[in-house]
Image (cartoon, rainbow, N blue to C red; front, side, top):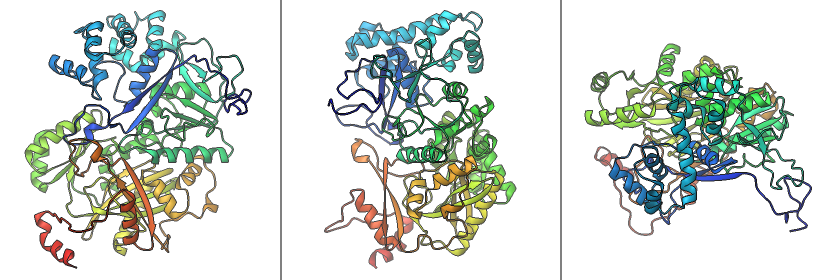
Length: 630
């Protein structure tokens, strides 16, 4: 080991013993709610789909940051589910993915003492006392007003990992007021380097985190550079494909001679390797933290379109706070994500879409459903992987779905639309510059519409679309891109049935099919998007456009999903409009059958040796019999 150089310090060898001045908390991410009937208890079989890692100077700070990283809807270490006394005791006794919120509730409402919690959970007293310290700070704050919050208490809250939103909720104020108060008192986070040598040798790393335990920054301001927001924890619907996009963006920025800063907190990713970028902030993807870093580094701007839904959801709040977003303007991102505004806009530019209505009351929804006829689709705004998206077939189902959607999408509208049965789904992935598409690829789904695009099998180039359908897709893609004035990546989804080609969704960000499209087309779409965003030239990249035909010409690419139903005891292996796959494969073949078979076999599918059970819904029995006999 004494011959291996330490990559961080460049001065010492690998046998140097680290003495650490930070605490790292790693928490898994579970997505049990995506599966019907699954047993949620955690045991010897792994069920998590991702993980987060947070860095702080104390256990309290590190833990609260990590809880928020797992899911932006978690405020921190505080009650979330509101268990009854029986449920609470059960959650403490049998570990599930919600146990930490049960412990937080017991401490917050003082229903159990620390020793009682220890007796039930057998969690070490040391950890429980750290959690108790977080709650004690909350108790000190909760009877104060904004004016009564003094320097000492606010600093203690920040040192214990409280976010501005948490403090605001506790004292009945707003996040912006807390931020202003905090800055007026001179309480700002300090940037610290990961220094594995405890200051015995100078560290020269660009591997950074922020903390309120410190008097000075370890590094000066970057003075410029472009911030790229990463994808956060891997979860169902947002996995390595968005990390691929983020890495491609930072590599392109560095090739163009620009300084690249990455903000992400997922230890499994390539984007959190400190040698990929000029500065790596291993920190939260929240409005508060991003503005802190943006102001400190005097960044040129922030790219929000390559990290999936978390950065995309931050576009509006960051824009309102005066952060410069690079690429598509924030109000246009809102027009695409807000179902109501998007549906209005589609009508206005003359693109066909399924009949829809904004949800104002249960009665108007039931009235709409009876007019267009069941089934209908309920769709909340600003969600990834179809969270709380449901197809309802009866009045009772519709009422249940509406309740769930309203819960997920509280600040944004819920739209209800006609669900088209037996339609083909088509997607267009593209890169635009100032509202004009400079790169595009159109691919089709093998499954009918109604299976989430992340669970569907994609074919590129499309094999079964008519020239008329392709032209309708191209025409709609041009109109939508122009109207939203897109610069950067875009993904538009359509359903086609008969002579109707209807637009159902537009994501003004990289989609999960970008890596597949780039590798099948032989050109990096994200590199093109990053160049478009910073105004660099893309003419030498040989990009496929809407006018390009027959590319790729001598093979077909098929992307197939990988499922983990067998790992999750009790889960029902059905696919719907909410995503359930945990991975994907892609294979090339001379034709679609060969590519499809290769990709199925790659997911662990075994060819049947003897008998095959063929099961099909009654409406398809006749057609299926003929096909099966052939």
